[in-house]
Length: 246
Image (tube, rainbow, N blue to C red):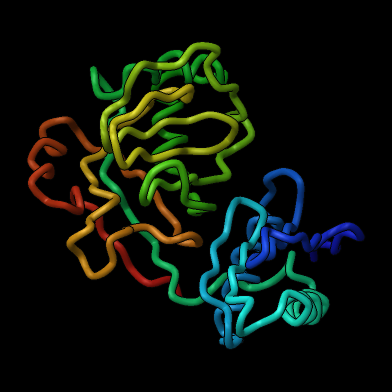
């Protein structure tokens, strides 16, 4: 059982139409669990006047229409819900999926695997086994549409970001640092180390659900070879499969 913090949850004003409910000042599994569970609980309440909810690594944001729900009334509802249970031990939201995403960890498609493995105190083979065997949670989305931050990885992967940015990694790049993966939905610069490559399309604006992964989903980046990955590039899912977590 995770003991609740005396300081958290911390409820703060987010402008004239928002509240930010934080469960920690740094990432931890209990704080992320609490943020995800609390957001799901707010959604389930269906409070009139609430227009949007979102979650970060350790917080939940609620945006409401102040013409239909006063700031004082919204805060009172949030405080009552927050005091109702120990959110650090809450069950994760229903409807989560477990994704298996084919990933190449060798050759030119993982150009920084060797240096990341060395930083983690592993051989390249050990690093691939560790990374491809890890089952991680989508802790939050951010930076670009549908881009997930995933963790936590084993302690050995508590490696720092690079001191210099990589000019650009390609769409579908899997990067690692500070016990987390980031999976890039677009080509962009990064200070994280590029250790794998996928063919998945995280943002599909024409689809019924444009953003593929949701906070709370779980993911395993299954090792594959470059030829197989190339064959998957015509598939928007990049060969990924999913199943509902019961």
